[in-house]
Image 1: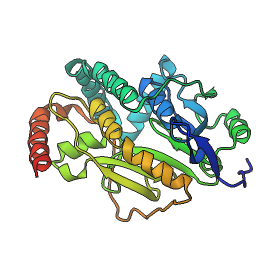
Image 2: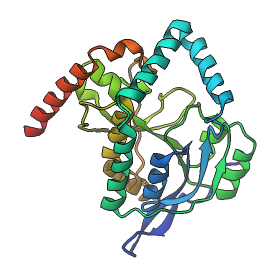
Image 3: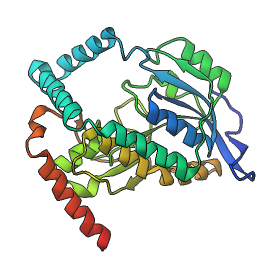
Image 4: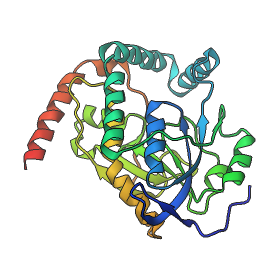
Length: 292
């Protein structure tokens, strides 16, 4: 692929009819009601030229078997089984979370007046699909933006746009890289490290340069790790909007992460014990901080 060399700043109209500097982007991630909302929300700020839906086979047994083998290879049988048990427990214990996340999304649509939009889409099993290169060459975005993705983005993809590729990460890097970082921060009693980060994608895992870190206060008691992830990102959307507008105005500043920290993975069944006590402690801390 040959990256576009045109001026990355274009002009788009906002919802009020005025014009403002805007960038064009293609979104990459798994298709679900939250990422569909995120794309619609992004479209009110920037020129979303398309979306690449990954893991299009994720509801098949082949996908589940592949993920199981990956877990076995990464952590062994005992850890893989423990992760699955935690997942099953969470599905039962926090069965209301999906409904509450849908309600959160609807609140966002109402608050920010986000209509549903039709965006040209490409569905692939993974980003090694040859159609990805042709899709990017056709739409020529200034930037790639990703969230909810379970694979490392190949260099041929993240190096394509002139402004780079960015991930909307639930976690305060560099200390919290990987999956379900809000859950892990609460579990560790690290309450000051709950927030979202936008960072540039490179060859590592959540290791790229940082655009911004936005601390947030979530509601933890009686909630599962899925809710915590989504609320963290939702609360950081106003900061993301400001950043995108700055980038559209030619203000793109990045900083190195610095420091070496572990990459977090899926929680295990031992997190069931004492989980609500950790969350209650966090909520008490949050309430005290919000008062001050």
